[in-house]
Image (cartoon, rainbow, N blue to C red; front, top):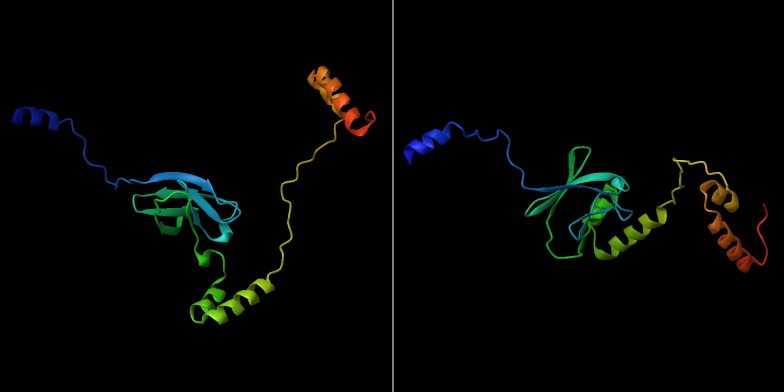
Length: 167
């Protein structure tokens, strides 16, 4: 047995110089509620990441969320199904959180009302404009070679609106 091990030992590789990571890694998009989904559970992240893609590493006992290669939050992993884990600090500014930590319940309600009343609705800015040209259905169907479908569409149009569409 010693001879066989010596023979095999020459063919063995050395251990890697880096630690082996036992996480399940994935990329997910942060939804409109500022949460990410790992498994069947939702975990909140800061609202600044809404709409962005972040990395998620799911370990045996924790879930880590990364943005731009940096760890932004670490959670204790939940094993129940369809649970949501929210952290208040992901939704409120630090100054409001600081006030909430040191006050009584009635004062917290007043602070929340004051904060919510001070919010201004954001103006939606459209950044990705895609020009769309209006195409008359009959012309489109002729271009695509779908002339039979044009007849069906014209009949449906006439039944719905009581007249034929203008050219």
